[in-house]
Length: 263
Image (tube, rainbow, N blue to C red):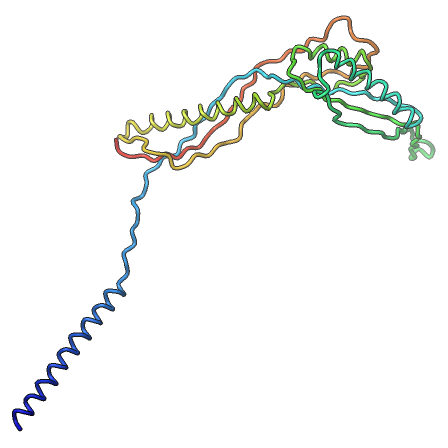
């Protein structure tokens, strides 16, 4: 009987030991699973920010001429007919110089009543506005790369019927502007790189990469204008009007953030 009791107690003790061991292992596993995985912080990158600039002197290749015809008559139809005759003659004469129809466009056309404002009248605080007719204004814009024809265009237009020259300006054609812009961006980036290298060399650092590049808008001067007085003339002058152009400076800049490291 004593041996039987001893055997039962030994079995119970063994079961308890196994249960305790398994429970401890499970708890240890739970703790291991619950541990937070450490977050990896990448090393901070050393950078330097530099602005590079580039300027190029270019010769404009496009002349823009704005001129027109103003006519006035008692009726709108009368003013319109006079204007159409003068403008057709002007456009035809300009095209005979070698200016294509695609280089000529209408920029503005208006018909408006004209009043003669007079006064004061008794009791000296009344102004009278008297209708006297209609005014028709038609404005052309000539854009051409034939810069040498600028003066001839003005004289020919005035001789054919134009009685208003608003503006003559020189600028760059879209094609040339794009070419110059691409060249300026290249030079500005190289300028930024050179500046960074010169600044880093005494510090024992060097460029090891590029983090970002920001481009600025191309800085262009205002079109070079040559204003011509209103040309109230009935015939072209005996001497051609001289029109000259000159070089213009174009500038752009870039902001570059370089990655740097020890030499």
